[in-house]
Image (cartoon, rainbow, N blue to C red; front, side, top):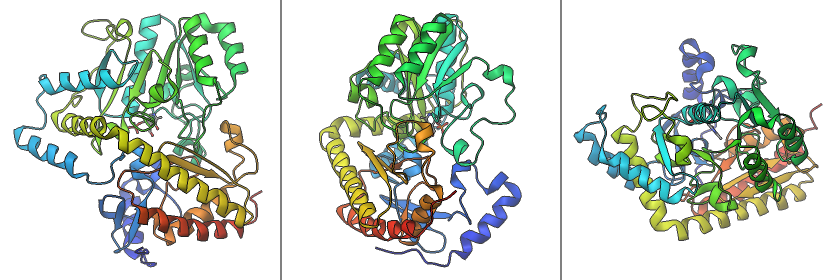
Length: 438
Ligand SMILES: Cc1ncc(COP(=O)(O)O)c(C=O)c1O
C-alpha cells in the first residue's frame, strides 16, 4: 500500500493560507483536524490522492456520500452527456418525474417527494411540512442526532457540533429552540413519558434510525417499532432522517432494513453519487400541503437541477440493477473489518466497543456498551486521536472524529481490506500506548 509521504508541507502551507480567508480554514467544521488536514489533489475509487503526493484508502467517503467510490464512471458518463444540454432550466423536466417515480418505488414511505440540494434543506422542510400538516409546534429529536445545521435541530447535536464542543450553537435564539424537545436515543421510557404528557402538541419526531453522527449507534430491539406505534397513536409525524442510511442500509434504507414505515423520510448523500442533491418525501396526505398545492412554503432555485438529477438517476439505476450483489458484499466487508478491530483491540489490551451495520462501522474506546449519546461520550478521545493519526500515517483515512462513522464503498478491494487490517494493528497499538484521558 502506498504510504503517505510523511512530509505534508504543501498541505500545511495551504491550511495556513486557507485560515486567512475561510473560518477555521475549512468549509465544513468536520474537515478540520489537528495539526492540519491534508489537502486533496484528486480521487478515484477507494483512494484519495493528497497534494504532497500521498495516497490514502478512504473510509470517510465524503461523510457517507460515496457508496460507489470516488469518480464512479457510470455517474460521470451520465453527467457528461447532460452537461452540453444545459445545467439549470428553471422549468420542469421529465427527468424530475422519472426520478420521483423511481424513489417512490424503492423508498417505502415515499408517495410524493420534493427534491432539494442538501440534507439540511431536506430536514428543515420536512419539519416545516410536519408542523403545517399537524398544526402543532413541538418536535422531538434525540441527543447526538444530527439533522443538518439549521436552527431548530442544532440542539445537543452530534457530528462536528459535538466534536468541537458546540452541540448547541450560539446565534440561535432560545425562542427558536424552545419547541425542540431533546430525548435520549434508545430509551422507550423517556419517549413514552414525554409523548404521554404532551403528545397532542408534538408535530414530529425526527430520528436517525441508526445514529451515524455520534459514532455509530444501533437501535435496540423493538425501539424503532415502539417509536412507530407511539407516534401513530398520538398523530405525530414520524420522520426517518435517512440522509446517511438511505440507499446504504438497503436500497429502501432503514425503512426496508427494519421493515418500518415512517410518515416521512429525508434522503441525500448516497443518492447524488457525489453531486449535491437530497429529497424529502412521505405520505401524500402530508406532502400535498406544500405550495403551490398547499400552504406550506418551500422553494429552491437549484432544486431538481438536471446535473444533480442525472447523477442521482444513474445511482438509482445502478443500485436497482445490482442490489443483490452490492449490499451483501458491503455487509460482509464491514463484518470483516469489525472482526479485525475486535480481535486486534483484544490483542493490544485496549478497551473497545466496535459496531457495524451494512457498510458502516466504528470503534469506541470504552469498556461499556454504547447505546446512546451519553455512553458514546465515555469513549476515550485521546485514544481515538492516536488511532486516527496512526491510520493516517499508514495511508488510511477515516473521519477524523469519534462522533462520526466509517463508510465502505463498492470500490474497496480485498487488497484494501487486507492493508487496512494491518494499519488497524498499528493504530490499535498506538492507542494502547495512550493513558486514559481524564
Ligand atoms: C443524518 C443527517 N441528516 C442531515 C444531514 C445534513 O446533510 P447536509 O450536510 O447534506 O446538509 C447530515 C449530514 O451529515 C446527516 O448525517
